[in-house]
Amino acid sequence: MELPKKLLDLTDFFSRFPGVGDKTALRQTLFMSKWTPNELAEFGNCVKELASLKKCVMCGMFADDEKCSVCNSEERGEAKTLCVIETITDCLAIERSGFFRGRFHILGGVLNPLVGIGPEELGLDHLFERIKNDEIEEVILAVNPSVEGDATCSFIKDSIDSNLKVERIGFGVPMGGSLEYLDSLTISKALENRQKM
Ligand SMILES: [Zn+2]
Image (cartoon, rainbow, N blue to C red; front, side, top):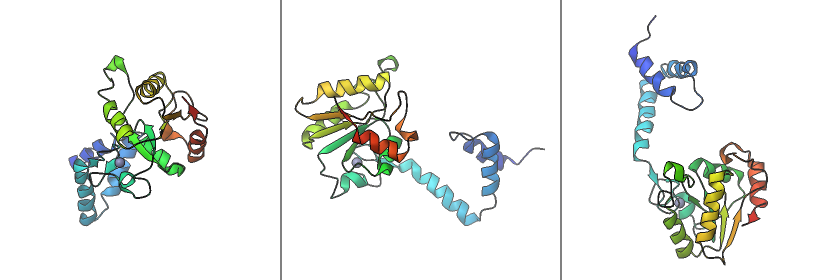
């Protein structure tokens, strides 16, 4: 039996999601087929809006306006502690832990010369400018532990004012691990037990 193309097309999109197989993808489509035309239109609209999603000009987090809610906030927008992370999902994981009240800087990756990712591709100049212009006093490197992550941290440490306090999170984060998959308590502990670089 062949299902209608409309169902197959949507299923194809669902099957592109991480961790979703063909069966699950079809189940989602069949579930949605019961929605009202209004619900489907709203869903379609939400998807369409993603195309105009903005990123904060300061930290790189998703934002409604030019700046994200952290950079815009009265309490944290002027914070002198900057947490440097690889990805937006890492940022969300740290926010979930509720432990950190400073500002973020999202690199979007780590240095990896083999695949052509150098300081320029990561926009490290923007990071160094921010540290200077925003009079950052403390830099926390919450970069995931890996060979490339370690090299990135060393590069950042060596490129900024040696009087700055630079620490790297350590305890509890396994080698090759990713913050995204850690529970809030492990992340709080890792932030608490950061080490001077
Ligand atoms: Zn921001």
